[in-house]
Image (cartoon, rainbow, N blue to C red):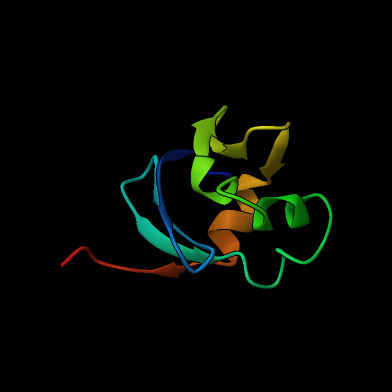
Length: 81
């Protein structure tokens, strides 16, 4: 199922809190990706903190993004406290 990301909140531990177009809130860990190209560039400085939503997925400066299907399928539900 292809759902667009509508909002992203970056956590300091390379975790993304995501909201999808169907209203679901999910948590995605970048820990298994952050040591691999192109995402390894996000480890230095504050680049990871620069995540934003573009064309229904999460992107970063420098033309880095991640597939929205991956974000949905490999994330877990969470509820805001």
